[in-house]
Length: 514
Image (cartoon, rainbow, N blue to C red):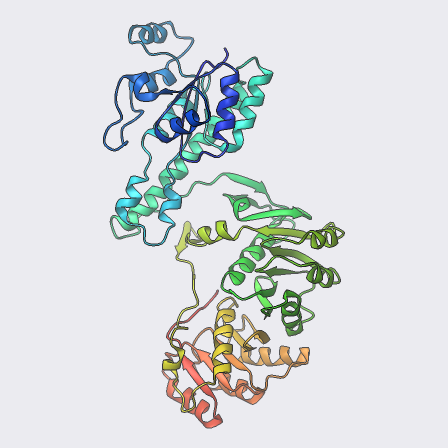
């Protein structure tokens, strides 16, 4: 039977008016609440307020709107049950054939800085999930929509089926409802278990399958991607993404997020192998990044925090690159890079990523998962002048280089050692079993690239357990060092620095990345 009556109550009003106009053209009666009803009226559509329909007013600052037998009875009654239809007629409960609901933005609210428990609680939707679940339970007769992207699908289905929808569409939409309400309740559970009780006693996670990935770490391993990756990253061209591509993209976005100046970073296997900055030209920033290591970028990942220019696209196109990530691309840059059909071109939604970055980091563990706060911000950079532990304080140029190097070393796998200037990396030592080995690797990499470390700054993600790692850096030409401090041999390390006349600061924070 054709849809005759619809109830619309949405927080996100994207596409609402056009969808409601489409329903109106099919002769569907529109019921609505609050702001949704106002939006529809302003668009010139006839709307019946739910409180008029039910005869019960909205109460308690809008907390009670749709929890009424005429709403839920209209959704839950079986159309093919004589007893249900008899009760519906006796109690004056007409059928509601379509429900359009998206929920109060609880997840977005708790992602905001400084949100209070009271503010979060007011964004817990009650009536919305209840209507969604009632409609989804009766999907054999009722169409329920909770995703804006399904508006056009519903109208198209109605067009093809004389104002009705197919069982297949209703079933698919019902599955989305239970997935959405489960995810919504999980977010509330996670937040309240921490905020209300002060302890992370529970953790819940329900995510939709977004896509099947090309493969996992290796071609013989299958892998799937769940959640809303596409809200943060849009693939513009290239081969399908693999598991390792996703890891690389996340690592690249995490790096570039920490830099405000125009920056280019090159990565391989989630580690940066070169980062450069230039206030006037992204192309120059690329040169500084690429000169750090001209071999590692082969098949690597390139990311920048400004729209990718045609000048940069030309030089990048000359080497084999697996993934390029940018907030946008100049038209000519797109045309240049489109010639490399397998190149994965990714557009990064920086606003969406900034919100997602606030979520905890999840890793599998035997029997379950580990949940960890993200290492959001380079810590310990404030008032560096007051954290000098050596006889000689750093120069202004060394302080600038220290701040840059500290942001870089945060993203290198431990044990991590960085040699840098104020606008570029010079040598990177990653993932070695001892810090002195990382220092030697960083020196060797700089030598291979033909870069001098004279006057460079050294950054270490963790403390120096012995002076030997620092000695290797001093011998290579470093004149300043930034590190967490906290070793039982700090005095020995400081003495080595003083003996060489270099400046050193202790941040008081470490940034291991395992």
